[in-house]
Image (cartoon, rainbow, N blue to C red; front, top):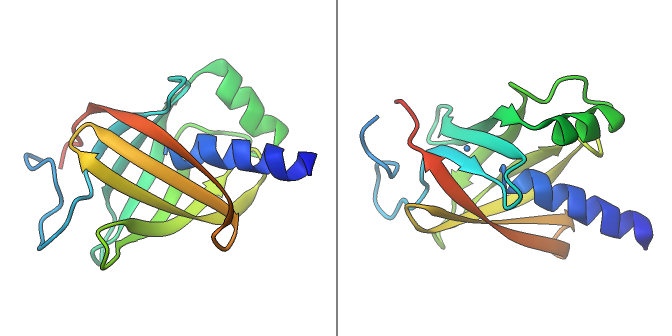
Amino acid sequence: MRAIKLALAALAAVVGLACGAPAFAEGPGDSFTYGVWRNPKNTVHLEIKPCGGGQACGKVVWANSDAQADARKGGTPSLIGLQLLRDFELQKNGSWRGKVFVPDLNMVLTGTADFPDATTMKAKGCLVGRLFCKSQTWKRIDIAAG
C-alpha cells in the first residue's frame, strides 16, 4: 500500500506540471489553456503547447534542485526539457486526456486536465484505470509564445 501512495504522490506532482495571442486553443468547446504552469509547491514549471493533430504536449522548462534530484533517483537523468505530458486530446466532456510520464517512477500513466478558467488547471492522475487517483490544482504563470 505504501508503494501505491508513493506512486500516487509522484504522479500528482507530475500531472500538474503538469505547461500566441490566444489564451485558449481554437475550436468549438476547447477549454485547454496553453502556457507555462507551476505545480502547487512551485518546484516545477511546465510549458503546454500544441503538438500537432489537435493534441497538446507539455515539457519541463524549469525545476528546482529537489525536483531534479527526485527525477534522477527515479532513473531520469535530466528533468529540464523532458516531455511529461504526451498526446493530450480534448474529450467530449471538455476535459483533456493523455499520457503522463512520471520521472520519479520511470512510468507512463493516464492523466486528465481541466481548465475552469485561464489561470487554473485541475490535474488528475490515476495509477490504474480510474482507480487510485490524485488531483491537484496548478496555476498559470505565463502564456505560451505561439
